[in-house]
Figure 1 (tube, helix red, strand yellow):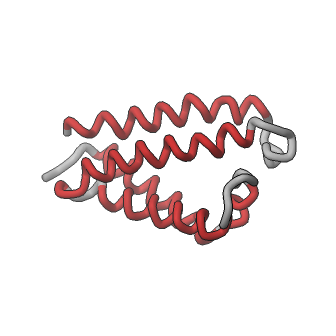
Figure 2 (figure 1 turned 90 degrees about the horizontal axis):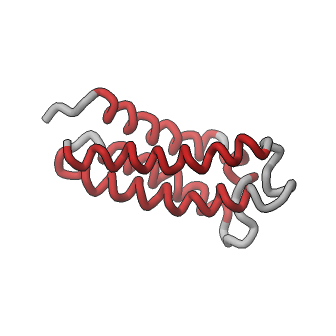
Figure 3 (figure 1 turned 60 degrees about the vertical axis):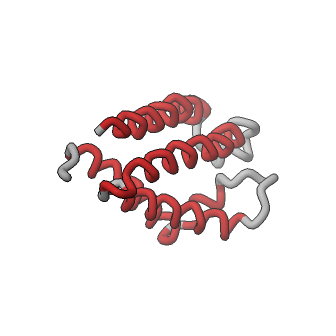
Length: 119
């Protein structure tokens, strides 16, 4: 089955983002909420999840499961976004306006994934 090009783009974005967890783990470690244990394994696990879910978008048998997984993953990642808003240190040097902008973007990404359940 052929899907719209933007579904493949979404898959590629998640695969790339997941790979970046292994190439630049320090970037992700800087923004991990302090109340979560096992920072490095969680960064690597989230990278693996992004890669698997991104690949899953390319196949009819796994597309919908991957979409639900992406939506759930993005919901969990909201913890990081809210944590980064909690203090100057937690912001990792990002400006507050950018951190606030990430919240609606996160929901837009969830909606973008949700749209493909009907395809």
